Image 1 (cartoon, rainbow, N blue to C red):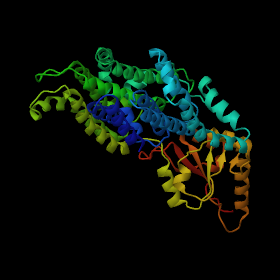
Image 2 (cartoon, one colour):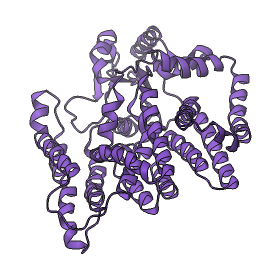
Image 3 (cartoon, rainbow, N blue to C red):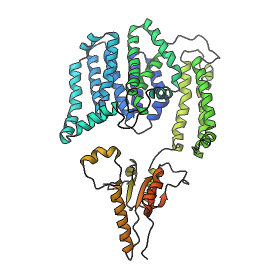
Length: 489
């Protein structure tokens, strides 16, 4: 849903800021950008947060370009409301990042007087009445909230490696360039035509600079952070799509069809050739480095290598479909040629190994529906959802993101390794004394990498019911250990 709304917003504001053609092209460019397409299919909060950040900045840009006080007011009130929702979604970065972008734009064009006409006081009031009540109520009920949420999760997360997500300063640059594929080949052209549009219309130039500050400030802002994850830079996808779409809208007219590939598509062909070789040889390469590519992926990867040539094929087919040459031949080729690949990738997703507990949960629900399950030194967050049990799963010696809660609440479901060992020993002793019933089965979910260490510490629980290396269809990092049934002698 966030992906679809982002595409619609790109079309609407592309049309408002530039032209109808720009709106259509920009929305389709965003749709066929690999990174945007991929994260639109992943359940995470980042695409929604990115949508809110982008929508608030687009509303500010709409207010700056409005010709009437009423439309300016509506845009600013929309920006304030959406920005407030973004703050409630993921914190203060939703306030500081848009503020930094607007500040840079105002400084660059010396537009300080424009601020008086942007209804900042009333917009600020709307922002405050949306943001403050929740923060105040939570702080009143939890006195430690300010220190944890504001200091640790906002400032310490950014300025220190407290969450152990540090990456090199340049980390987001290659992520941005690869994520923008296949449209990254038109990025130099887009930057060049920004300067060309300066001589045509100053209003377009100021919009272009706003979008450039949006992209640059976002990349730099998160590059300085000590906590880096790939989806953090999702907010740059919409402004980049708008700039590339605008570059095609203002492209010079073409008077005849050309047989030769233009430079960007020639670069794309070279990249497609290299990627095709890598995909076709992925099986041999993975075996050489002991990665063990699943057999189900070999054929789909080879088919992907064929789909990569779609834009080049469409480029040469268009002259037979349209009688008149068009400057839109290149973007149409890339859009129409990329969509089949993305559809195939969506279908292929089922073959891609990913960490899920669905298969493990199905095994437990069908084979061990009433068996006590313990989580040892880990917490697969999707497992309780798939198991759908009425009581929480006991967690042994693991806190992770539950660390803050465990400091202020004593939970019987959180236990130490020593307590678990004593409980296990007591259960086995009781079962051996029972003249009738065998030892009640007790199962423990352990990460496969930690399984040998677990068996060394708890040899009573050495039977592996699920998760052996021979289960090649399993897409989980976990195995299921249990106590062997022991009848009294």
